[in-house]
Length: 148
Image 1 (cartoon, rainbow, N blue to C red):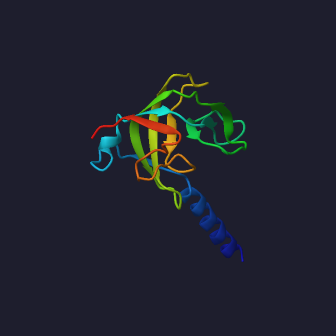
Image 2: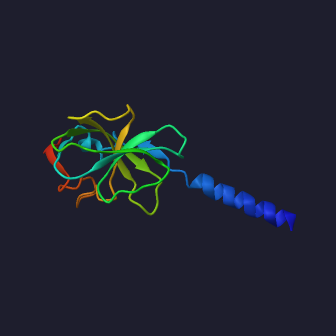
Image 3: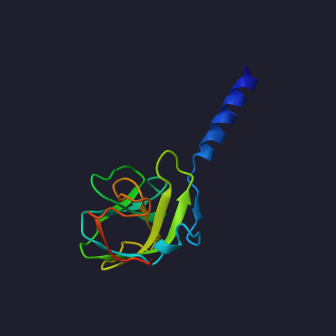
């Protein structure tokens, strides 16, 4: 019986480790290279969330999420993004997330200051995604420059 319990515990621990999201920078891949340097203007409602692992942890990164957003102990802060702010895509990351879409843009923002200086990401799901695979939602982000 003890042997089965240990096997079950090892299996559960392995599953938890496998669930951690890992990112790979695919910015130089020909499929994604043209996105780097793309610029957008914020024209819709979107908030910046400071994300942390638990309620007492330091914020690890900032992510943009349109309403309704979410709440919980992993939220370090939430601030609305100013209309007219400009964002530039710096990197494209591919994750091991499943079943959610696995692409994330790392961006730089102009037109407002974040509460802390951390990497800013836009995941291409939760309402941020446009109709194409590498497009942002045009109701929130107006494309003002793209490399072709």
